[in-house]
Image 1 (cartoon, helix red, strand yellow):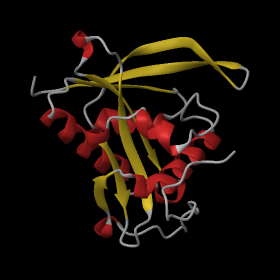
Image 2 (cartoon, helix red, strand yellow):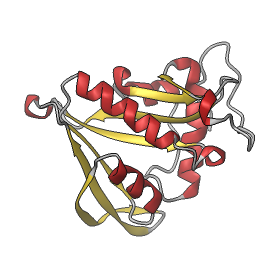
Image 3 (cartoon, helix red, strand yellow):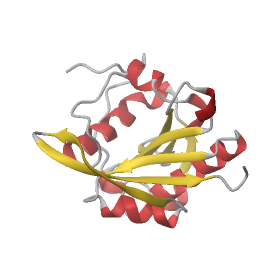
Length: 185
């Protein structure tokens, strides 16, 4: 499969195990400059099997078009390596749901356990609150206990479990529906 990569950028490489320290990590708006590395991290999440129903990574143009530009961030180390990303998509075109978004957060396997998911969630919460978005929601496979714990610590609540909501590699999967309501609205 060929993936779109920003002009002038080499395709993403897997980051080494020593992916920067927490002190040298910055949270930045995601741009096309990050495309290859963002998609590589997404691919790693897909391959792990408990992050998404998706089975392949889209090209950058499709990925970017599906996510709101003002509410997508990357965690970048001092060597310009993307270690994680977070982004939201609108849940509906209906005006009543204009303040409801669905998010995804992914951290490179070698950078997990360093608080990057928390920092990415904090950046997303700040940007969505400033924009008047009142609900951030997501669905998480119940087996992804680390993600559920991360979200609960960030103020998300479990709404419920959607049983057998979709098929993934030939088997039915449940999804835990989570949400965070804005304190500003």
